[in-house]
Length: 404
Ligand code: AMP
Image (cartoon, rainbow, N blue to C red; front, top):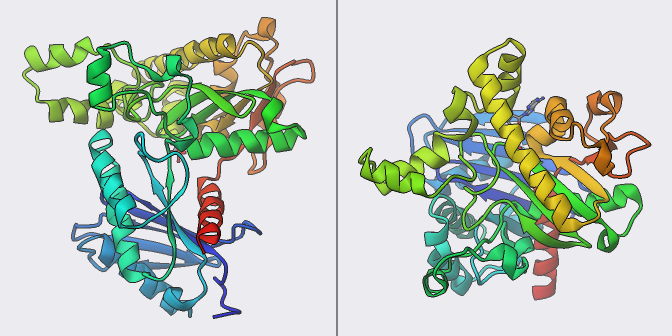
């Protein structure tokens, strides 16, 4: 086992309803040894794409379920000469979307923890059941490796009550665990800590606004390492305009669609989560393609872009007021890291608040954290690539070590 290329590394698993992303990485050197994606699990056209130390392998075997997907991944590792079950893997880290009111920190998975994740599933029906299936599949095939759940909600567990509470019947809210939980917490924490490092400052002394802008998108206001507010709520549907999700809407729309359009709750759920956002407004949720269409003068795309920016700026303003003093604004995830126009436009005309983006610095592309504000800007604007896998791997090893 010792000397194995994956000795001491962590397998990070992110299971979706019909997909499973994984990475094997060294939490200390940060080296990514393997990386892959199983898609269309449960369909006849399944595919696993697997990268191991720079070389790619593909399997088109149909995958009946997640366990079959993991079995295929382990076979692909065997073809690379690695027996994952007997190679000194330190831990498996599972991304779990909803920790409900129970889970505030990375947690070693046992039967009790699995049943609790299942119980919480009603809060995140699109995510937790899939996460759990991933946990069960990996545990069945790697029973001796400690498995750790890392919750997307954990970082926000002690949001101030004023930010966490919905203005509704208190008894109903309590009975059904209805409150604002926040998501993408692993990313918000990782990126805000990394921003402090990049600036050579103490995380605990910085006031930050973090914009995680990917296909799913959320923002947070973090004061001295403690989140004061975040845009996602009981589910990842609230807040910013996203690739396919509405973000904030008037709840009255639900009543209107049910009463007047005769839509079922499931229809509305699908409409709001999968057919809305940028895709709903202009048919396009890939931001690159959207920007090209805006550039080409497409009016539907231009309106979608304006709505997207309007929501972003609304929250930027709100979080500036909540924080009082802002030290950094940090952009991350697919859109935040790559779409220079979004960074420029979302912070345009804020010089009077000490925020000034430098167009040349903003145009620079790269994988490293970088400052994009001018030297005169009192708020430092940063691009910091997120790395949720690394954050999950670090947490998983820590918990596995402590449990030994
Ligand atoms: P994520 O969910 O973090 O993987 O982000 C996915 C989103 O990032 C998609 O909308 C992509 O179109 C967008 N994205 C990735 N690269 C670029 C780019 N170079 N310019 C604009 N958007 C990008």
